[in-house]
Length: 73
Image (cartoon, rainbow, N blue to C red; front, side, top):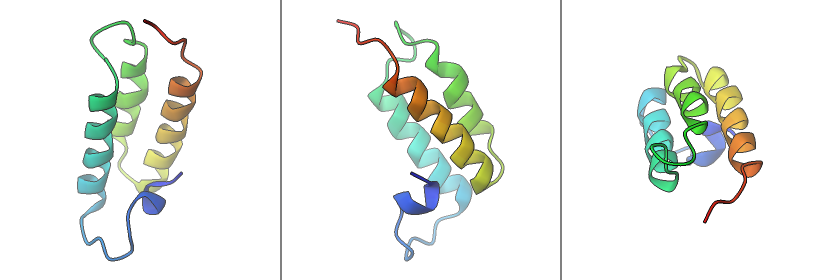
């Protein structure tokens, strides 16, 4: 899923605002300080993105890392 697919066409927020919202949701949904510290690099790549294309590539890597992560109790 790309950043443009995550928001409606009527959304007038800037790329940076939309990027930051997605990153905030990911951080809320993961435990970056606990057993899932390996996700920090992927989140950092998303945060560093300067264009929507860079974000989409970084987000794809993040989703892949999350989906292949071992489930911890």
